[in-house]
Length: 352
Image 1 (cartoon, rainbow, N blue to C red):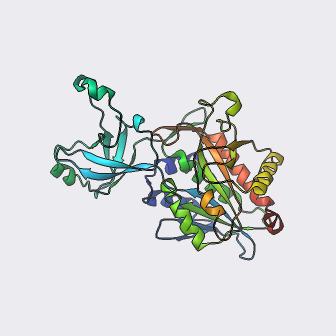
Image 2: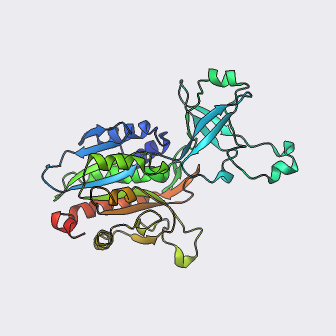
Image 3: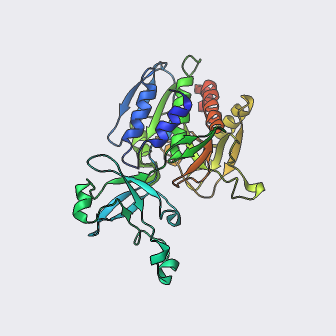
């Protein structure tokens, strides 16, 4: 399948943390002709390309499958659904958003209820938005009917936002954190076929990053990579930050971060990656973040210390129902990953 089709399938796949199965199915389909797979009980997928030799340092390419979502916590007598977040949301943006609720019969459509202004009191107009006063409406008129629809407590819920790539190469859709990272990682694996490498590669589509990097913890207990590259979808700041602070702009290429709230990426590895990208003509933008977090934090501290870098695709409106990015930044991340894997060897990794 081509790049845009791959991104479309990944974006449209429903995969709240803990329920990543549809995403893994897309990854398996894309890599089935050149790799073998393992999968653990946390829904981490390990992709082993056919070109590995087994006697070289193992480099892990990681991207997390899960997206921020919700879970049904209770069914009210009127048929609406109480729910809680899975991952971080801006609650103010939730009312009137369309969602997909998992049922025994498949996903059904719902909406996060927003009261008509005709019915709102002054107190309701000024009330803060919280999960205590939000519900999902699937069109049921009673709890009995909602259950007849197949809705159950514990059901995962994700945004209903169809992927679109317009004529300008602008990508619109849900879950770009981190489905664009997954796409870049899979495309990188495919591109590495036939390349001369001094390392073996394992691609990992990891689970439950949005709820505390839980899946990658299991991964690092299972395999011991010599170094790791995390492919991420990162919040673009080019429409929100002053010009001197813009570090993750659309069409800026790879966002290579020095640090965020959870990790200081391996400095020597970061410097090597930056020089490699520049030598290959790949656009990079360097970032220092005071917030955020990613799998790199758990990778760097595992197995006695594992060198790690984080490469990001800029995404506007991350952790919302409608993300925006551009295809050329995905391409930059693929080119970056290929160039870096071709440069790595045991001595270079040992110098980190």
